[in-house]
Image 1 (cartoon, one colour):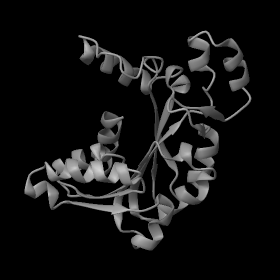
Image 2 (cartoon, rainbow, N blue to C red):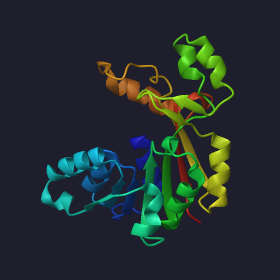
Image 3 (tube, rainbow, N blue to C red):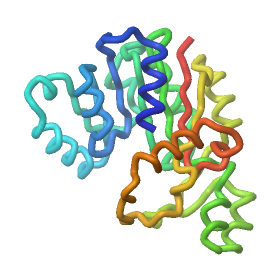
Length: 233
Protein backbone atom coordinates (compact mmCIF):
# COMPACT_ATOMS: atom_id res chain seq x y z
CA UNK A 1 0.00 0.00 0.00
CA UNK A 2 2.90 2.34 0.72
CA UNK A 3 4.17 1.85 -2.83
CA UNK A 4 0.70 2.56 -4.19
CA UNK A 5 0.40 5.73 -2.11
CA UNK A 6 3.83 6.98 -3.19
CA UNK A 7 2.89 6.35 -6.82
CA UNK A 8 -0.22 8.50 -6.48
CA UNK A 9 1.64 11.30 -4.69
CA UNK A 10 4.44 11.31 -7.26
CA UNK A 11 1.94 11.46 -10.10
CA UNK A 12 -0.02 14.36 -8.63
CA UNK A 13 2.47 16.72 -6.98
CA UNK A 14 5.80 18.25 -8.09
CA UNK A 15 8.91 16.46 -6.90
CA UNK A 16 10.28 18.06 -3.74
CA UNK A 17 7.09 19.84 -2.76
CA UNK A 18 6.47 19.75 0.98
CA UNK A 19 2.92 18.48 1.36
CA UNK A 20 0.43 19.08 4.16
CA UNK A 21 -0.73 15.61 5.20
CA UNK A 22 -3.59 14.62 7.50
CA UNK A 23 -3.56 11.00 8.74
CA UNK A 24 -6.91 10.14 10.35
CA UNK A 25 -6.86 7.02 12.50
CA UNK A 26 -3.08 6.92 12.34
CA UNK A 27 -2.64 4.12 14.89
CA UNK A 28 0.97 4.04 16.10
CA UNK A 29 1.98 6.55 13.44
CA UNK A 30 3.93 4.36 11.01
CA UNK A 31 2.67 6.08 7.86
CA UNK A 32 2.71 9.55 9.44
CA UNK A 33 6.33 9.20 10.51
CA UNK A 34 7.36 7.77 7.16
CA UNK A 35 5.92 10.78 5.34
CA UNK A 36 7.49 13.18 7.83
CA UNK A 37 10.86 11.57 7.14
CA UNK A 38 10.29 12.38 3.47
CA UNK A 39 9.97 16.06 4.37
CA UNK A 40 6.20 16.52 4.58
CA UNK A 41 4.24 18.35 7.30
CA UNK A 42 2.05 15.71 8.93
CA UNK A 43 -0.89 15.94 11.34
CA UNK A 44 -2.01 12.66 12.87
CA UNK A 45 -5.42 12.10 14.48
CA UNK A 46 -6.11 9.10 16.72
CA UNK A 47 -8.81 8.58 19.35
CA UNK A 48 -7.44 5.45 21.06
CA UNK A 49 -5.33 6.60 24.04
CA UNK A 50 -3.05 3.56 23.77
CA UNK A 51 -2.38 4.13 20.10
CA UNK A 52 -1.65 7.82 20.43
CA UNK A 53 0.64 7.13 23.39
CA UNK A 54 2.55 4.65 21.21
CA UNK A 55 2.68 7.21 18.39
CA UNK A 56 4.07 9.84 20.74
CA UNK A 57 6.71 7.39 21.98
CA UNK A 58 7.67 6.55 18.39
CA UNK A 59 7.85 10.23 17.50
CA UNK A 60 10.06 10.96 20.51
CA UNK A 61 12.69 8.62 19.07
CA UNK A 62 12.91 10.60 15.83
CA UNK A 63 15.45 13.39 15.17
CA UNK A 64 14.34 16.89 16.11
CA UNK A 65 13.84 17.97 12.49
CA UNK A 66 11.29 15.21 11.96
CA UNK A 67 9.56 15.82 15.30
CA UNK A 68 9.01 19.44 14.29
CA UNK A 69 7.12 18.33 11.18
CA UNK A 70 4.60 16.18 13.06
CA UNK A 71 1.57 17.24 15.09
CA UNK A 72 -0.45 14.63 16.98
CA UNK A 73 -4.09 15.21 17.93
CA UNK A 74 -6.17 12.93 20.12
CA UNK A 75 -9.67 12.97 18.69
CA UNK A 76 -12.31 11.27 16.59
CA UNK A 77 -11.85 11.24 12.82
CA UNK A 78 -15.48 12.29 12.44
CA UNK A 79 -14.65 15.61 14.12
CA UNK A 80 -12.06 16.91 11.66
CA UNK A 81 -14.19 20.02 11.14
CA UNK A 82 -13.75 20.87 14.82
CA UNK A 83 -9.96 20.77 14.68
CA UNK A 84 -9.09 21.96 11.16
CA UNK A 85 -10.18 24.45 8.51
CA UNK A 86 -11.57 23.14 5.22
CA UNK A 87 -9.06 22.86 2.40
CA UNK A 88 -6.07 22.84 4.69
CA UNK A 89 -4.38 19.65 3.45
CA UNK A 90 -2.90 18.33 0.22
CA UNK A 91 -3.19 14.66 1.21
CA UNK A 92 -5.65 13.00 3.59
CA UNK A 93 -5.15 9.39 4.69
CA UNK A 94 -7.77 7.20 6.32
CA UNK A 95 -6.45 3.65 6.45
CA UNK A 96 -8.22 0.71 8.11
CA UNK A 97 -10.76 2.97 9.84
CA UNK A 98 -14.00 2.75 7.87
CA UNK A 99 -14.60 -0.86 8.92
CA UNK A 100 -15.17 0.39 12.48
CA UNK A 101 -17.65 3.10 11.45
CA UNK A 102 -21.31 2.14 11.10
CA UNK A 103 -22.10 4.87 8.56
CA UNK A 104 -18.93 5.83 6.66
CA UNK A 105 -20.40 8.45 4.31
CA UNK A 106 -20.33 11.42 6.74
CA UNK A 107 -16.76 10.56 7.74
CA UNK A 108 -15.57 10.35 4.13
CA UNK A 109 -17.35 13.60 3.25
CA UNK A 110 -15.66 15.32 6.19
CA UNK A 111 -12.27 14.05 5.05
CA UNK A 112 -12.86 15.36 1.54
CA UNK A 113 -13.66 18.81 2.92
CA UNK A 114 -10.20 18.91 4.47
CA UNK A 115 -8.59 18.68 1.02
CA UNK A 116 -7.37 21.62 -1.02
CA UNK A 117 -8.43 21.55 -4.71
CA UNK A 118 -6.50 18.80 -6.43
CA UNK A 119 -5.76 17.13 -3.10
CA UNK A 120 -5.49 13.35 -2.72
CA UNK A 121 -7.75 11.23 -0.50
CA UNK A 122 -6.38 7.76 0.31
CA UNK A 123 -8.73 5.17 1.81
CA UNK A 124 -7.89 1.62 2.86
CA UNK A 125 -11.02 -0.50 3.43
CA UNK A 126 -12.07 -4.12 3.79
CA UNK A 127 -13.25 -5.42 0.44
CA UNK A 128 -16.96 -6.14 0.73
CA UNK A 129 -16.98 -7.94 -2.63
CA UNK A 130 -14.52 -10.61 -1.45
CA UNK A 131 -15.57 -11.52 2.08
CA UNK A 132 -16.00 -15.18 1.11
CA UNK A 133 -12.36 -15.54 0.07
CA UNK A 134 -10.71 -15.95 3.49
CA UNK A 135 -13.16 -18.50 4.92
CA UNK A 136 -13.27 -20.30 1.59
CA UNK A 137 -9.50 -20.61 1.31
CA UNK A 138 -9.27 -21.89 4.87
CA UNK A 139 -11.99 -24.51 4.38
CA UNK A 140 -14.72 -22.77 6.37
CA UNK A 141 -17.45 -23.57 3.88
CA UNK A 142 -20.37 -22.42 6.04
CA UNK A 143 -18.61 -19.13 6.70
CA UNK A 144 -17.85 -18.66 3.01
CA UNK A 145 -21.44 -19.34 2.02
CA UNK A 146 -22.76 -16.82 4.54
CA UNK A 147 -20.23 -14.18 3.45
CA UNK A 148 -21.66 -13.88 -0.05
CA UNK A 149 -24.75 -12.07 1.21
CA UNK A 150 -23.33 -9.67 3.80
CA UNK A 151 -20.91 -6.81 4.30
CA UNK A 152 -20.25 -7.60 7.96
CA UNK A 153 -17.59 -9.94 9.30
CA UNK A 154 -15.60 -10.79 12.41
CA UNK A 155 -12.02 -9.60 12.19
CA UNK A 156 -8.89 -11.15 13.65
CA UNK A 157 -9.34 -9.13 16.84
CA UNK A 158 -12.69 -10.82 17.38
CA UNK A 159 -14.67 -7.66 16.63
CA UNK A 160 -17.78 -7.56 14.46
CA UNK A 161 -17.07 -4.93 11.83
CA UNK A 162 -18.10 -4.02 8.29
CA UNK A 163 -16.71 -3.98 4.77
CA UNK A 164 -17.20 -1.62 1.83
CA UNK A 165 -18.08 -2.45 -1.75
CA UNK A 166 -16.11 -0.75 -4.51
CA UNK A 167 -19.26 0.40 -6.32
CA UNK A 168 -20.70 2.05 -3.21
CA UNK A 169 -17.51 3.91 -2.34
CA UNK A 170 -17.07 4.99 -5.95
CA UNK A 171 -20.53 6.56 -5.81
CA UNK A 172 -19.75 8.18 -2.45
CA UNK A 173 -16.53 9.75 -3.72
CA UNK A 174 -18.26 11.07 -6.81
CA UNK A 175 -20.99 12.59 -4.66
CA UNK A 176 -18.56 14.51 -2.45
CA UNK A 177 -16.52 15.97 -5.34
CA UNK A 178 -13.52 13.72 -4.81
CA UNK A 179 -14.05 11.17 -7.60
CA UNK A 180 -12.12 7.92 -7.68
CA UNK A 181 -8.92 8.20 -9.74
CA UNK A 182 -7.28 4.86 -9.01
CA UNK A 183 -7.86 1.75 -6.93
CA UNK A 184 -5.71 -1.19 -5.91
CA UNK A 185 -6.00 -4.50 -4.13
CA UNK A 186 -3.99 -5.14 -0.96
CA UNK A 187 -3.27 -8.63 0.46
CA UNK A 188 -4.30 -10.61 -2.59
CA UNK A 189 -2.30 -13.78 -1.86
CA UNK A 190 -1.20 -13.24 1.74
CA UNK A 191 -4.47 -12.66 3.57
CA UNK A 192 -4.60 -16.18 5.02
CA UNK A 193 -1.08 -15.99 6.48
CA UNK A 194 -0.96 -16.24 10.27
CA UNK A 195 -0.70 -12.88 12.01
CA UNK A 196 2.63 -13.81 13.61
CA UNK A 197 4.01 -15.76 10.65
CA UNK A 198 7.73 -15.37 9.95
CA UNK A 199 8.63 -13.31 6.89
CA UNK A 200 9.78 -15.43 3.94
CA UNK A 201 13.42 -15.33 2.93
CA UNK A 202 12.48 -14.02 -0.51
CA UNK A 203 10.45 -11.07 0.76
CA UNK A 204 11.23 -8.78 -2.22
CA UNK A 205 9.68 -11.30 -4.60
CA UNK A 206 6.60 -11.69 -2.40
CA UNK A 207 6.15 -7.90 -2.37
CA UNK A 208 6.62 -7.74 -6.14
CA UNK A 209 3.92 -10.38 -6.62
CA UNK A 210 1.50 -8.62 -4.28
CA UNK A 211 2.17 -5.26 -5.92
CA UNK A 212 1.59 -6.67 -9.41
CA UNK A 213 -1.59 -8.47 -8.34
CA UNK A 214 -2.87 -5.35 -6.58
CA UNK A 215 -3.02 -3.44 -9.85
CA UNK A 216 -4.06 -6.29 -12.17
CA UNK A 217 -7.50 -7.67 -12.94
CA UNK A 218 -8.99 -10.06 -11.93
CA UNK A 219 -6.67 -10.45 -8.95
CA UNK A 220 -7.19 -7.04 -7.35
CA UNK A 221 -10.94 -7.61 -7.21
CA UNK A 222 -10.56 -10.49 -4.74
CA UNK A 223 -8.02 -8.77 -2.46
CA UNK A 224 -8.81 -8.66 1.25
CA UNK A 225 -8.44 -4.88 1.26
CA UNK A 226 -9.03 -2.13 -1.27
CA UNK A 227 -6.91 1.01 -1.54
CA UNK A 228 -8.96 3.79 -3.14
CA UNK A 229 -7.55 7.15 -4.21
CA UNK A 230 -9.86 10.07 -4.92
CA UNK A 231 -8.94 13.59 -5.99
CA UNK A 232 -10.72 16.71 -4.82
CA UNK A 233 -12.23 18.66 -7.72
